Structure formats: C-alpha cells, structure tokens
Image 1 (cartoon, rainbow, N blue to C red):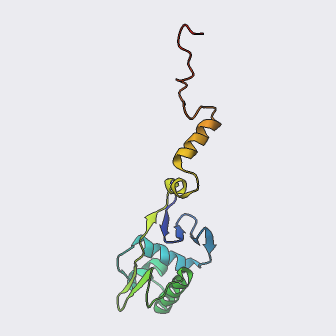
Image 2: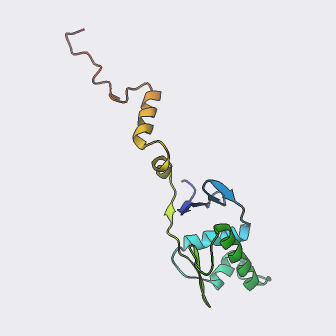
Length: 151
C-alpha cells in the first residue's frame, strides 16, 4: 500500500517520508512540529484541543512545559507554512480551545502525477505501447492482418 501524501496549495505532506515540501523542495521542519502538522492535517476542519495535541506529542505522563512546547511547535509550523495567525490560511487558532487546520486538502496519488505532469495519460499510454513494440493506432494488430486470399 502506498504511503499517505496530502496536498494543500503548493505543499505536499508526505507521511511515509516524514517530510513537508513546497513546489517539490523539502522544507526544514523539526520532528515535533512536523508530527503536529500531520495530526492537524489528519483532522482537517476539526477542532483539535491543546490536550489532544499534548497527548499526541508527549503522551500522558510528561514532565515538560506542555503549554510552551505546544506554542513553540505551532509557531514553527506557521513559519514553515508562511502562515499568519491574524489571517490564517492553514492553521486557525480557536482561542481557549485549540487549533484547526482550515486549508482544503486532497490525497496525492500516482494518478495525480500523470494528470498534473506535462504528459497526458493518452500520450503516456501511446509511449508505453510503442516501447512494447505495439502500434498505438492498432495495439491488437487487427488492421495489419492481411485478408485471406490476398497474400
């Protein structure tokens, strides 16, 4: 099964490679902020509380300043996405409650690579048939067959 990839605007979040990229270039984002972004994207459109974030990032029995840790992780995610907390495109703060990932997302899959690339699916099919030695106009060889008695 292919690893999960999610696209939003110019960004691709690759869950399998644990990587965020923009326009194909990787963006440096530390482990906890990246893990937070993945969690928020997984819950796109839904309110995620600070308690839920703390559980995901550190677990139940933690001995760190969770509030400061969450604030730092949120700040780093916003920096990576070039997002503005006053007019968020991606990460909305719900004061006193938590955060919500508000951008439209879509799954990234192999079909997207073909449909958004410079080669159409039809052109790709023709190239594959040609490479296999088949006539793209007559892949079954029906038109080439000589009618009986004309050989």
